[in-house]
Length: 237
Image 1 (cartoon, one colour):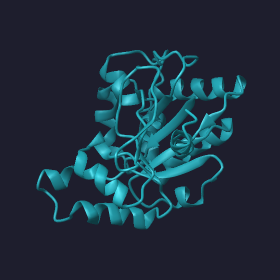
Image 2 (image 1 turned 120 degrees about the horizontal axis):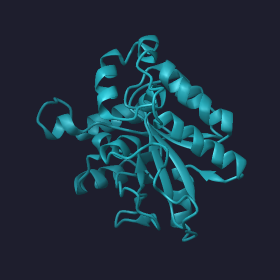
Image 3 (image 1 turned 180 degrees about the vertical axis):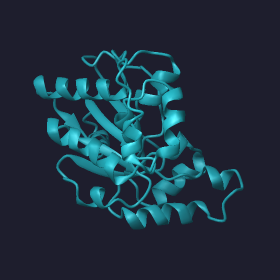
Image 4 (image 1 turned 120 degrees about the vertical axis):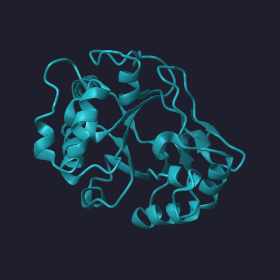
């Protein structure tokens, strides 16, 4: 069962649009974890896109914020009141947060990254929250030093195959941290960022498009994470 996710991470509208256009071109579903208000996300196709939340709790636990966990959750849920899923920025998690997610009536969280592991399953927690692990992320792929000519996951294997891409890395075709570190000071200038786009070796965009092409050509049914969570609750996966 294949699913695509995207962590928006405060990307500009132009960069978000670039990613949405590619999903639409190939007719592939995606769960988008949003950090902020985006007009594009509010208007995007609900048949292809599920919008979850991507809150950043690290300032709270570092003592650098005047906001509480509830404040941060309420702010992002005010923007996306229909969200049923959550993945925290930096994958920050603890038991107290899991309980808060349940209290806020969220259906699932997807904070467990298990790189390149196959045979993954969703499971229900003590508070009825569904946990959906995932097994691939673009910046983790380059942290391992792997080439983007291959995802290193057998996409014919059983269990959940859940990919996580960041629109900024799709836009830049990022292949390593050095390109990203040089480019990120121009995060709000999509025209300037184009001059940093990788065209030398396989990168995030290349792999992303190849995966979308595979799904379209092989008529692979893709899912959003909300669908996977409901299947878990029905004991169907």
